[in-house]
Image (cartoon, rainbow, N blue to C red; front, side, top):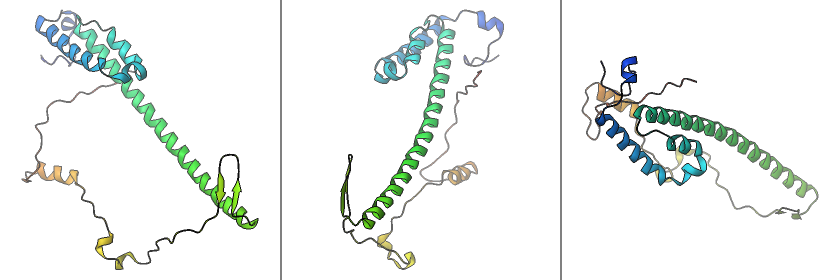
Length: 188
């Protein structure tokens, strides 16, 4: 039988009241979490659902507290996924606007050239044709001296991890002991 409180319990274990030690550990964990939540200004403005769920938790029942924390975690992760989806949609929208803006700039230049005017005023801006600064034109990068290049050093984490797993000693890196990891499987 497992002593891990996170693992599934038998029907008998589920109905047994928590021991004093378990209750003390749960209350301590809850107090630490609550102290962090109280100082989080975004919780009450952006994440009121999490604040409400956790504020109604029954501290005397560690299983209720655990269930509420699991539900709050799933809720937060779903909001993160939604935010990422919005981020992609807004990025696509921004790129469309940038492309449209460039197309309109080219049209303005052609119109001003055809009219011929060097300055035009509208409600939101004034457009003017000015002499452009000389721009860099690179004809062959291989002929340029190294002083004009930036080099970046990037860690190949996959190769380093593989070498360490095969027993290669690498100064400055080692594998951790592993430990445990929390896995949440969403029910709905």
